[in-house]
Length: 114
Image (cartoon, rainbow, N blue to C red; front, top):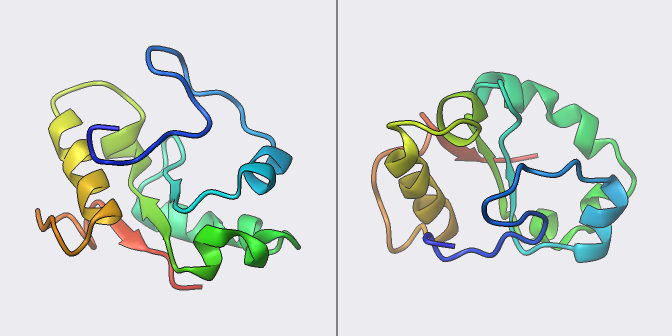
Protein backbone atom coordinates (compact mmCIF):
# COMPACT_ATOMS: atom_id res chain seq x y z
CA UNK A 1 0.00 0.00 0.00
CA UNK A 2 2.90 2.37 0.69
CA UNK A 3 3.96 1.89 -2.94
CA UNK A 4 0.48 2.68 -4.25
CA UNK A 5 -0.91 -0.82 -4.68
CA UNK A 6 -3.68 -2.81 -3.04
CA UNK A 7 -3.14 -6.34 -1.77
CA UNK A 8 -6.22 -8.28 -2.84
CA UNK A 9 -5.24 -11.48 -1.07
CA UNK A 10 -3.64 -10.75 2.28
CA UNK A 11 -4.13 -8.75 5.45
CA UNK A 12 -1.64 -6.42 7.08
CA UNK A 13 -0.02 -8.03 10.10
CA UNK A 14 -0.93 -11.59 9.10
CA UNK A 15 1.01 -14.34 7.40
CA UNK A 16 0.56 -14.57 3.65
CA UNK A 17 -2.32 -16.91 2.86
CA UNK A 18 -2.26 -19.91 0.56
CA UNK A 19 -4.02 -18.67 -2.57
CA UNK A 20 -6.08 -21.02 -4.70
CA UNK A 21 -5.85 -20.50 -8.45
CA UNK A 22 -9.60 -19.86 -8.55
CA UNK A 23 -9.15 -16.87 -6.22
CA UNK A 24 -6.67 -15.28 -8.62
CA UNK A 25 -9.04 -15.82 -11.54
CA UNK A 26 -12.03 -14.47 -9.57
CA UNK A 27 -10.24 -11.31 -8.40
CA UNK A 28 -8.58 -10.78 -11.82
CA UNK A 29 -5.95 -8.32 -10.54
CA UNK A 30 -4.58 -5.37 -12.51
CA UNK A 31 -1.02 -6.36 -11.51
CA UNK A 32 0.43 -9.71 -10.47
CA UNK A 33 3.58 -9.78 -8.36
CA UNK A 34 5.20 -13.21 -8.52
CA UNK A 35 7.79 -13.51 -5.71
CA UNK A 36 7.85 -17.09 -4.38
CA UNK A 37 9.38 -17.70 -0.98
CA UNK A 38 13.01 -18.77 -1.26
CA UNK A 39 13.22 -18.15 -5.02
CA UNK A 40 15.62 -15.70 -6.58
CA UNK A 41 14.71 -13.91 -9.80
CA UNK A 42 16.19 -16.60 -12.08
CA UNK A 43 14.32 -19.40 -10.31
CA UNK A 44 11.08 -17.42 -10.38
CA UNK A 45 11.51 -16.96 -14.13
CA UNK A 46 12.09 -20.70 -14.62
CA UNK A 47 8.99 -21.61 -12.62
CA UNK A 48 6.68 -19.40 -14.70
CA UNK A 49 5.89 -22.35 -16.99
CA UNK A 50 3.70 -23.74 -14.18
CA UNK A 51 1.49 -20.66 -14.32
CA UNK A 52 1.42 -19.95 -18.03
CA UNK A 53 0.19 -23.42 -18.92
CA UNK A 54 -2.99 -22.83 -16.93
CA UNK A 55 -5.85 -22.29 -19.40
CA UNK A 56 -7.03 -19.15 -17.58
CA UNK A 57 -3.61 -17.49 -17.54
CA UNK A 58 -3.93 -15.58 -20.80
CA UNK A 59 -7.35 -14.22 -19.78
CA UNK A 60 -6.12 -12.49 -16.63
CA UNK A 61 -6.17 -8.70 -16.87
CA UNK A 62 -2.58 -8.39 -15.60
CA UNK A 63 -1.36 -10.77 -18.32
CA UNK A 64 -3.32 -9.07 -21.10
CA UNK A 65 -1.94 -5.65 -20.11
CA UNK A 66 1.69 -6.77 -19.52
CA UNK A 67 1.52 -6.07 -15.79
CA UNK A 68 3.05 -9.31 -14.48
CA UNK A 69 6.03 -8.58 -12.26
CA UNK A 70 8.61 -11.20 -11.29
CA UNK A 71 10.62 -10.43 -8.18
CA UNK A 72 13.38 -11.91 -6.07
CA UNK A 73 11.28 -13.18 -3.20
CA UNK A 74 14.29 -14.65 -1.45
CA UNK A 75 16.12 -11.35 -0.96
CA UNK A 76 13.32 -8.84 -0.87
CA UNK A 77 9.78 -9.97 -0.14
CA UNK A 78 9.59 -12.99 2.11
CA UNK A 79 11.35 -12.03 5.29
CA UNK A 80 11.64 -8.92 7.41
CA UNK A 81 14.98 -7.21 7.62
CA UNK A 82 17.13 -4.35 6.40
CA UNK A 83 15.98 -4.79 2.80
CA UNK A 84 12.42 -3.68 3.52
CA UNK A 85 13.13 -0.24 2.07
CA UNK A 86 14.50 -1.81 -1.12
CA UNK A 87 11.40 -4.00 -1.31
CA UNK A 88 9.22 -0.90 -1.16
CA UNK A 89 11.35 0.74 -3.87
CA UNK A 90 10.92 -2.33 -6.08
CA UNK A 91 7.15 -2.20 -5.66
CA UNK A 92 7.08 1.53 -6.42
CA UNK A 93 9.21 1.03 -9.57
CA UNK A 94 7.15 -1.89 -10.79
CA UNK A 95 3.77 -0.27 -10.12
CA UNK A 96 4.71 3.23 -11.30
CA UNK A 97 7.57 2.89 -13.81
CA UNK A 98 7.22 6.40 -15.21
CA UNK A 99 7.50 7.95 -11.74
CA UNK A 100 10.07 5.91 -9.80
CA UNK A 101 13.55 4.79 -10.88
CA UNK A 102 15.64 3.27 -8.09
CA UNK A 103 17.72 0.96 -10.29
CA UNK A 104 16.29 -2.35 -9.10
CA UNK A 105 14.82 -3.44 -12.44
CA UNK A 106 16.77 -6.40 -13.79
CA UNK A 107 18.34 -7.09 -10.40
CA UNK A 108 15.46 -7.33 -7.94
CA UNK A 109 12.54 -7.47 -10.36
CA UNK A 110 11.61 -7.64 -14.02
CA UNK A 111 8.51 -7.57 -16.16
CA UNK A 112 7.47 -10.99 -17.36
CA UNK A 113 7.63 -11.12 -21.13
CA UNK A 114 5.83 -14.35 -21.95
